[in-house]
Image 1 (cartoon, rainbow, N blue to C red):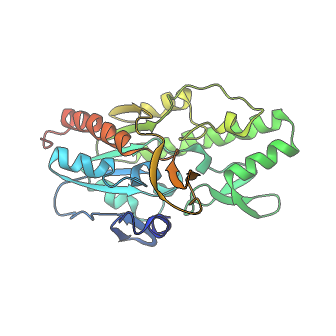
Image 2: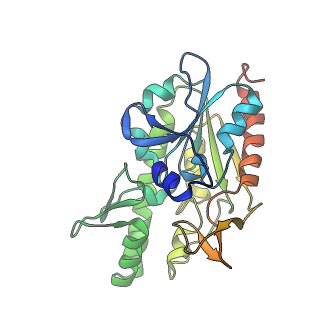
Length: 280
């Protein structure tokens, strides 16, 4: 998806993409890191990648700490994304690992199978129809009773917590859990509306789930802000995926703004200095 972001957003932004060494289907945002020198790894989805941001928080963190930071932001990623392939070798070599609290919509359940290589995309198990998780949930709400919807949502959440804990438990380096969102973790589900169930990113994740995974990290950084949103981008005739068109200008209302990235980097730098003697 990183290549899609670059295709959509050029020539206004250059994400300096490079090939993931162990998965050529994945394009990571630059700059690459030299694994013979100390580095921090940042695992996450689009908020870590930093769409519509010239300097995402991993780059700002690198500047603040004076050391390399790997931007391993993979659009739509869930915990299963980083439980496969060769991620373990890169994580084991890091001085510390920042793990963004990922969305639970990128998790499977008994009725829907997410593709860990395509984030929130997958197939409905009943008929193998390809679709996004949001579409699956919408159709389920239209065809099933509320009790069934609640059961499937709870199953998805439980699978997410289990896989997030597997991911965190498998990381040898000190781990910092990052909540980067325009909403706080706590929210009450409104099962009458799709957004009432999903809520803003990280979709489906609430304070109870965060409490179940935070014990597996050395530190937790909660960066809750909507500073800089909505973010006006550039004139266009049609909206791009992930944007809305307002008075002929593309507008970002979804992805973290540059101001939010700056705030996250500042909070992370302080935490990194407290747990890493090598960080200045």
